[in-house]
Amino acid sequence: EVQLLESGGGLAQPGGSLRLSCAASGFTFSSWAMNWVRQAPGKGLEWVSVISGSGGSSYYADSVKGRFTISRDNSKNILYLQMNSLRAEDTAVYYCAKSSIFSGFDSLDYWGQGTPVTVSS
Amino acid sequence: DIRMTQSPSSLSASVGDRVTITCRASQSIRKFLNWYQQKPGKAPKLLIYAASSLQSGVPSRFSGSGSGTDFTLTISSLQPEDFATYYCQQSYSTLMYTFGQGTKLEIK
Image (cartoon, rainbow over all chains, first blue to last red; front, side, top):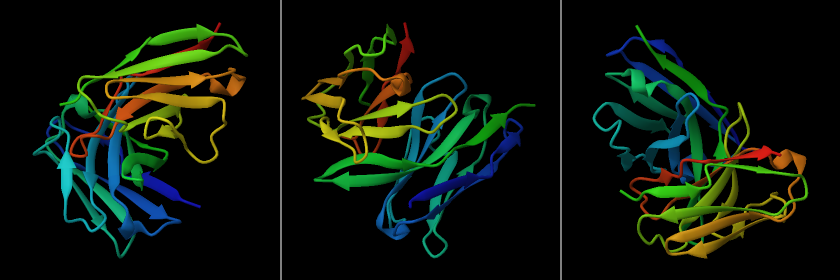
C-alpha cells in the first residue's frame, strides 16, 4: 500500500524558514517523480514543485522560485521542501504527491494527508 | 503559463442527478487533463487521467471527455458520497502543472 506522510509544518515568522518532509512507502520511491502541492485556507490547489526520480531535475511555480528548494533522499525514501524567505501568502496546507505516468500522460495518483504551514508574526 | 478555468464554480444537485462540470484550457493541451475530487479536510483523490481514463477503483458513474481546450467531467447518477469539490489539472506543461479553481458540488 502506498503511503505518503508529511511532517515539519508549523508556525514560522515572515522571512523565516521551514523544512517539510514526506516519508514514502509501498512503492519504488526512486522510480517516480514527486511533487509538492499547496492549498491556502479556503482556496484551491496550487502546484508548487516537482523533482525527478533521480533528483537530477526540478521545477518550481513562479510564486516560490528562488525561495523554495525541493530535494529527495532515495536511500531513505524521503522527499523534502526547504522553504526560505517565507511570506504570509505561503500559509497553506502542503501536500506531497506521487507522479504517475500511463501511456505518456502524467497525473498525481497518491497524496499525503498534508501538513499545515502558517506564516505570521 | 497555461490557465485552467472551471465552470460552474459551485453547483447544487440532488442524489440521482446527472452532473457535468466543464474545464477550459487557455491553449491546447491535447488530452493532458486530469480530474481530482477533494472532500473537506482530506487530500485530493485522482478520478480521471488523460482526459477520459478512469483511475483504478473509481466508480464507473464518473467519466471524462474532451481534448484540445475543452473538457468535461460527468457524474451519471449522483451518490451522497460524491458531494465534494472537483478540480481539473493540466499536465501538458510538465514544467508547471496548473489546476482549475475548483467546482464545489453541494446537495440541493
